[in-house]
Length: 602
Image 1 (cartoon, rainbow, N blue to C red):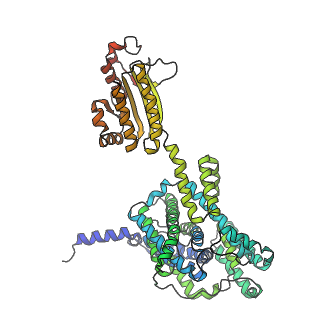
Image 2 (image 1 turned 135 degrees about the vertical axis):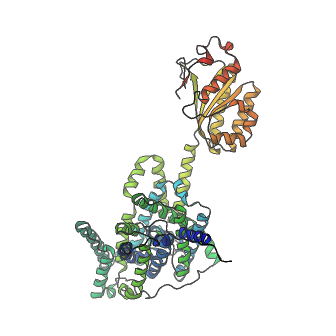
Image 3 (image 1 turned 45 degrees about the vertical axis):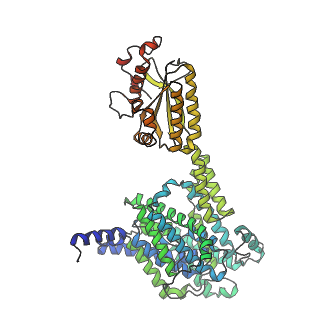
């Protein structure tokens, strides 16, 4: 049976929602194409040297970085919610990949890195399907700041051997710091020519950056620097003098190939895969949000997470290693005037053409030159202003930043993120678990306020305010406060009013504590009244059957501004009715209780 026009429209809408680039294409114009083409070509000029350098970080041949800059960038661009985010190999992810595959033999590293991309993509897809993509808002940015600091330090330390022309020492089973120590023991064997090439690359890149700023140009600083030192290596035959080069890059595009689904490898890589999956989503979503805040674009976070998941999964079938959203290339894309996601596709095509027609020119690029570029990238990776802010803001933030950065170097780069996340929750829970108890009083000025030492306590009615998150972590402190309130029964008190306007999100543990308190007070002939209850508290009391045992007449729901009587004053009136005004003949606040024009000052 042929589909109806309405069904076809619905299918098209789903397709446009699933692939935002197709939605952008509906309103495409020649002006948009020119803008996207200019931005895409500019991004590709940055992507080629970065991809080669990042592959060097990950410990795999340069062409796999280029493959990742083609496939992941193209697939990610088609599915990205952000119009400017560029996916592909990144600094931080490459360092994490290096740590994850370091124990694998040299001839298995590429296959392990490709399998890792598959694992990362599957985990990210699971996160997306559970619609947990925006969980990054619950993770302190101090974790990311600490991670970038640790990653930058690791990156610099890892590239020292390439900058000095030293052979790597140690095995994959050795800790990174041990391998570094063993390598630097041979520092006397430094190749000064290699060091000069590396430092020269840094000077050239920074010089081109200064020229760009001075004359408002867009010269490719990294590509220009690497091309210059590559020409010098070729012209002066520096390879024969000990300067290590990238070597031959196959002039071919990546073909379809199944990842090596080795179950032993999967078990070994799964922990790193989880950490890299979370890190990749954090990177991509954080950058997409930052750019969207500048452009005013409405961002679909879950769609962005889907893009990362599919890009990694698809990339694993085309010999790519894990990637994420690139800060540098995304900013370049936006600043170059990109209008839609198609600028990313154009960038990927440009990198592919570079491999096909210009791959032989990369033969003489020196590894020391790539190391110099990476050290510049390491410096730019650190959010220096944010680092200073979080170190000085609070001791909790300082602890999280420091612990995350130190664990990146001392333990491992991929697990430092999990350590930082765990630590941020550990430090947060005690603060969230604080429940505040304040005693209130009905003052002679006809005002309900906090009771001070000079206020004579009422012998019949006592009022208290409970504030805080009533979850299981707060239960011990809640029970202490309830025990404090219970002590008033020894003073002949007949009614206790609990104001719970700022008590939020109760769970079963705290509801049971409150229920037991009410029963104990009832056993001593003390009536408990709850007032200023929010809807979530009322629903929880009903669900936990606390309201049923307490009695609805003892509960007063929070009333919005404009009500003649607030719920607290209603509770006070009800309490007076319970005990009888005549029982408080000596109380200075009893006069014409029902007719008082009470105000509410808390």
